[in-house]
Image (cartoon, rainbow, N blue to C red; front, side, top):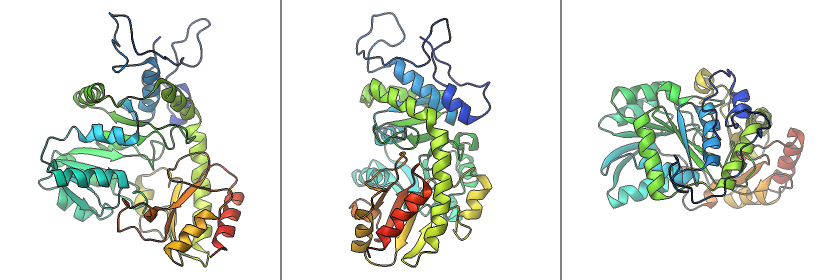
Length: 375
């Protein structure tokens, strides 16, 4: 069974999400790839062993490639993909990264710095001048934009260009934005990471990460790391992820539209001190986001008027919005991010991150209002 790799004849990403990764069309061929529950393969073929490949992986990787561009690999989790990406940096490399990025990445980089593996400079990714200055003498730039959970926006075209002028390896976490919003590989990035767990699969039922690149040598290195490291995705998880990708554009469109409305309503609420969402005209990253992002995303954060305990109470009292970590599912999720010890100290104690799902926006808003009324 073979798979279409790029769907280059299809213009629109919304269509690619549906057409990519299909089995080759023949008489009575299935529309969907089968789940390949095999660890051992007869000798002489391209796979060789279950840690080296799987037909289900190939189908899902084709779909991710059709969205992000380049060649893609899937991994057992987003953190597994991030670890694989950072394996490209030699021992002692100087890495520049956001000071308000995903807590898992910041923990990984801090531990690597403590062990002497990397030298890490954390910067305000929204301060382009400071980022460009930090690039001098660096080896790798890790960009997350919008950042998690502060929703800061990096000037991706300018920063990536500056990094490539200095011959840095550039990696972009595109989980919040997704390929429907921004195209880092087309801007010159070397590697793009997605937590497939989130918007791409969209149903809060699998862990998976992906890496995409246009560089054949980087692809081979990342593939070799996965084979030796063993951070492989399960066949059933790959099948579920591909099924989720089919509806990803529809889900994401609805969630983005609802996020805009909710951000505007939250901004006017007397118990909300600040709303962080690039779709708001008052947001410091609005004009920047508008210049190169196709959407403003489906995640927003807001700070309440009150204490950390009050913010916890808000999350605990919701009926429609699920009180849980993660994001990007069909269901709305929220949490106070500083409840996690690994979260950056720069994140306010009362900040609640809200991942907007596909419920009716008025039901989500009614739930927010009733939850805020408990403080």
